[in-house]
Image 1: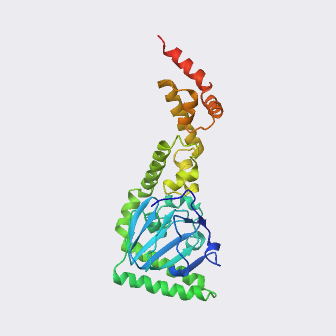
Image 2: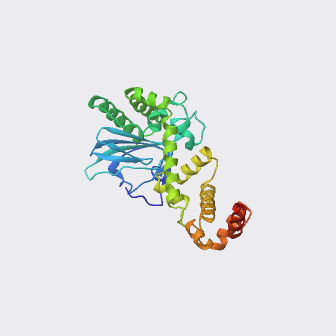
Image 3: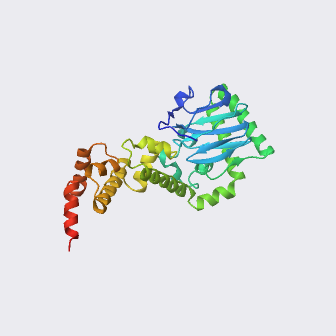
Amino acid sequence: MQLTSRVPTYGMQQRSERADFHIREQFERSAEPGPHRHEYFQIQVNLGGDTVQLIGGIERPFPRSTLAFILPHRVHFIPHPVDGKGVVLNFSQEFLLPHLHCDPLDLEDVSIQQAPELSPFRFQQQLDFTLGDSEFAEVLALLERMRGLDGSRQFGTREGLKGCLLQLIGRVCQLYAEPLLALAGSNAAQASRRDALGRMTEYVREHLADPELDLKKVAAATYLSPNYLTHWLRKEIGKSFSELVLERRMHLARQLLLTGSKPVGEIARLCGFADEAYFSRRFRHAHGLPPGQFRRQQTQLQVP
């Protein structure tokens, strides 16, 4: 799946007049043409038409009778077949977890003991939530109940909607209790994050010479959202994206200066700098000397 550098972000107000919960049929609005993310939680239910879902750089099957659980800010895409049918549930973090006061980017680190409702969302990259006929019939009944409640909001309706939503999530948790608990015990979410950061690191290494290398391009190429990637980098290695790229470019420049005779201008180009003067300024700031003088000094130090 070819990704673009721009990953659109949607808020609840762009999908519903209500900021808490909304249910709709898939065909009420045309499907998104490519990877995107939301500020809210989403559950997609496939009522017909086998397809796949791309989530966090992982491709998983998405046949009929399957549910997809998508965290806020998680880049994802489900291409819908022409004859496909489905239901989409959108709801806010405050609606699902009013007791949980944390940044939505930290939801993967919340334990399932603290918020078991998060379990299928946290491990969507590792599991396919495909239900049998009787279990899927239970889900369809809950969806029908939610449609009716959402269509005529009255006093107490919000609580009824949340009750149905929790029943749906709870039923999936019951059916997949064993693998969900096993994944929680194995720190699968952290491993998934490390894998994503590994993909990011590999992409940066391969494209370091590209002067147009930026956060949006790398995030899209590694199937992450820019703010998610920024958050992870700060949390995992304590650096911003620009700091990481500059550090790697300076390391490469140092290697090229010490192990060859390429001109400084060519080294600047190989390290992703279109401007030799700017490269020299950054190198001097990082190493205390301009590149040419750094090379001469290190060469003299190596002479016996």
